[in-house]
Image (cartoon, rainbow, N blue to C red; front, side, top):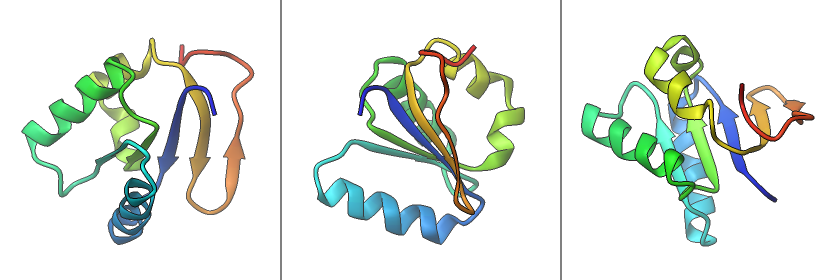
Length: 96
């Protein structure tokens, strides 16, 4: 799939489990939730900016964070999956 796959979930343990499984399969995965420290969040944001991630697991509250929104504005998003089964496939190539 072309672009970053974003998975939005409030469930930290589910994020970790799925991220670990994808990493074991060779995918580049970032996770940003309430357990992530400032350094880890900034490193993940840099990887998003540099298009170094295949998947991003993110807590819903990050969408109210200006720094996060600035980071994803120019990224290529392939798909967004909201925990609960709803899939959004944006008809556009970037998040604007």
